[in-house]
Every structure is written in structure tokens, then in C-alpha cells.
Length: 353
Ligand SMILES: Cc1cc2nc3c(=O)[nH]c(=O)nc-3n(C[C@H](O)[C@H](O)[C@H](O)COP(=O)(O)O)c2cc1C
Image (cartoon, rainbow, N blue to C red):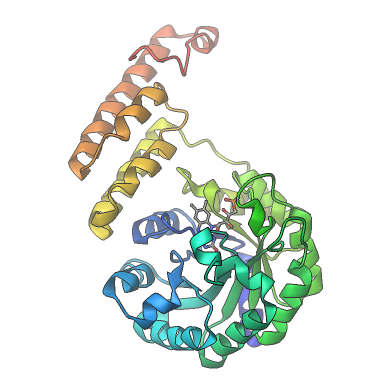
């Protein structure tokens, strides 16, 4: 096992819950938000090595960490080994000391990606996959890791053998999403394949799939031989999940509740980060804002309103309004007094409609 693999294993043993890469989601603002609240590492959105070859500044925006990010994992996708070699050099040069690792995407099932032989299509082309890893490792001064799925075709379970091949090519860790590419995001993730991969290789394995709560994350760590767990959709509106999962898994601390006020404060913080760091992505706030509003009084009404906001100012004004409504709701509960009276107050009924 390479020293990079050992380094990662020791990092994961202290910090097992990692922010997963998500295209269209994990921009600078999202990463800073998750890191401030407990994610020990976060990945860039996936970046095309062909895009980096033609060096548009727009593509580099996906790669470069925000000033506040202490480190970043950069995920690359493509199909040409020589472009990976070139991209590794360029990413190392531009990101510098804050580059934690370079990950190669062999998991993306999107049609426009797989039709070019990229992403999960590489699981169906192990020779090219191996050449890509060797090319990347030959130029890298940081760990090169790979993210895969159970297999490419329906019912296929090549991940353990494929991971052995990746290890032989020099990968320092492998992440496994327990679904085949053909499954996309349907059905349930199979965690047994994560366990099988972890037994097949000596390098550390990161498990992924259907980790929606801190309890799910702790359970994946306990039930499989994975060294770490990717939190992807489970971070939606829940930046505390990393710290909560770690406290639960490592110290047995029960998961605390994050109430309406805490959620609104977090949403304000996330919006401010988007406004400051990726103002072009303000439209994304419509989606993530609805995640933070889950479970709030009159959530359906607020969801309907938030998806109509366009500017930072509109979002802020709406949150002020929601905050006043939460206060009024809490006051009504206090006035009602007894716990039984409280229980009879409809929490998700929607008198605003
Ligand atoms: C919106 C979205 C975008 C994603 N983009 C990427 C990506 O760019 N690279 C990648 O390796 N995985 C990507 N994934 C997969 C996640 O990293 C993760 O493996 C998957 O969502 C399973 O975990 P979960 O069920 O806990 O969400 C994406 C997932 C989602 C939902």
C-alpha cells in the first residue's frame, strides 16, 4: 500500500464523514457552508479534463477553492489518459498546497457523459480506466482516488475486481456508490458491495449511497468495512450532519434536533455565501432554500414563495418574513401552555393559504 493510501486511512479514521462531489450543487458556497459546520473535506463539482485542456476560466472556476477553504478535493472526468496527465499537472499548479487529492470519476451515469466513454462507461472499459489511473498517478504529487459504482450494466457486480485493478494501477483509495450505472439513482443502494470492495483491496474504501441522516452515516460505517462514508443528498438543508454523524459514530452522542431558528440562520448564511462567492449561481438558492425549510410551520407556502425569488435581496426579505412567522408560531404555542394543548396545534397545517 502506498504512503498516500496510509495517509488517507489515518485521515479517515479521525474524519470518516466526507462531503461527496455533486455536480450542480457543490460549488464554493456549498463547500464552505458544509466545512464551516463540520465537513472535514469537500469535493469540487466534476470537471472535464477536455475542458481544462482548452483552459476556459469558466472551467477553472469549478476547480479553484474559495479563500476560506483550507483544502479541496478536485474531481476530474474524461476518457483520454493523456488529458488526465495534463489536467493533474495543471490542477496541482493552480490549486497548490490546498489540493488534498485528485479524484477520477468513473461513476457518473449521465447520458452525455457515458456516450463519450467517460464517467461510469469506464467501468465497461477497464483497459482505458487503468491507463487513465496510471497516467494521473505518474504526474501527481497528491493521492489519486477513483469513484466507481457497483457496475455499469444492470445486475453487474464488477466493483470488487475493478477496485483491485485500480489499486494495482496506483489508486490511493476508492469510493463505491452501491448502485449500477443503469440504476441511476433508483432503487436502494446495496451496501454489501461496499463491504466486498473493502475486503478485496488494501487501500481505504469510501462508501456511498442512501446516506440521508447522521444515523445512516454511522450505520454504514458500522455495517461495512468502509473506512469513510460519503454524505451527498443527506447534506441537503443539513450542514450539521457531518458533526452529528461523527459524534454519534465515534462518541455515541445522540443526534441533536436542529430547530426552525437554527435552520433559518443556516439558510441566511448559505445565501450570503452564494451571494459573495458564486453570485452567478444565485438561482441554485431556490433549490437549496426549500431544503432548509423542510419541517418549518407553513413550509408548503414558503416553498411556493421561495422558488419565485431571483435576487439576494428577495431571498433575504422572504426569510425575514418566515422568521416573523416562526416567532408568531412559537408565541402561539407558548400561550397554549400545557404540553397536551401544544400537541393539538397543527404543525404543518397551512393557515396562510
Ligand atoms: C445532484 C447530484 C449530483 C452528483 N454529482 C456527482 C458528481 O459530480 N460526481 C460524483 O462522483 N458523484 C456525483 N453524485 C453522486 C453522489 O456523490 C453520491 O454518490 C450519490 O448521490 C449517492 O449518495 P446518496 O444516495 O447518499 O445521495 C451526484 C449526486 C447527485 C444527487
